[in-house]
Length: 471
Image (cartoon, rainbow, N blue to C red; front, side, top):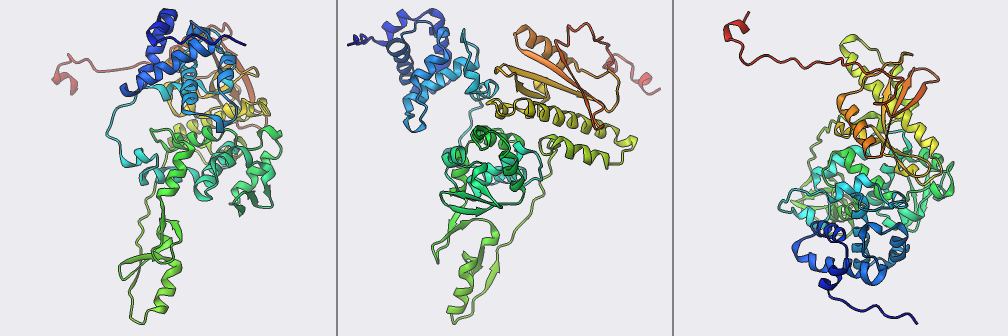
């Protein structure tokens, strides 16, 4: 029988831990409120001393993580969730000597965003309930109702449809709904059989061509998070938030006690009393007195967006749209921007083909291009899970020339110094039937390419005399 580990106080455990470990734990504790710090510290100390018997936090491994975190979600307790959060923190900020394996669980950039300090504001009621405001809901609906032919975007839109419109359980969407659930325009669920919008028919047919491990929505959390990103929301959208929003936007009719969404077309006003449309006719027939019925007035708000179309459409569909478009020189800049989006769509498609039937397919992030501060367009992965930061350059010609901004160049240098992979995917003849793709590694040190400074910032001298400035 194994000897039980001696119980120690937190102060005694601190004497055993390395100085580096204590400093890292302090940084982790700083992400919690003051009232929670004591509980969190005790949990982390117990984990290190009693269960893993590690004195150095940096020596923790993926196997350590798997030994304490059960695979069955139903067994996840608050204590286990806290410890998982500790491992996420260590992985996100590169505190581990051997981080191998964690890339299969999490996307580092997303973890960093989660741990980043946010401005403290008074919480709105919607934040307390974990639901979306009407304004946020409108922005999201603009995204999920947009026309799209791209598989990953359709998957994202379907996840919203399944959770918000159909009200399916989160775990069922994540684990049970696959291409096998689909037949002839319908999906079979635990709640029954539903007819689904036509745009999702193609999605399920495409998913049926994938390996059985990748023909569903296992990456539900990531897909839902992308909805918020595309809608321009500052907070991260999670599945429970959608379920809560469905609940808060559902209203019970005071006459028949049936529940409907709070959309105007479901309701009417009779003598200033709001009832569902179904009840309005029966009430008018039953009451001998005259009733005044009034439709609920609706105001449509046009939500225009500058959303990157490469996220919505496949490479072939984008190319078709561009070929049918007449271009004049006044619209040349806009055309060049669309050529850039076309190149990103092409590279994204190629990366999906390369990583097809691997666990990294769902981790490809094409939305990096939406934030110029990133310095690259697509986050992909090598076959063994190493992050690949891709800057896409595209041209309609055959020339071996492209523009690289100073920010992109510096990003490449910084990532190289950090041991990260920054590559340029250069697509030539993008409008042809067979575009040419060249992959360029270490662009800043590549001897096959010449860098030329082409842009200058011109500003007027402040000392220039006013009378001269008018000449």
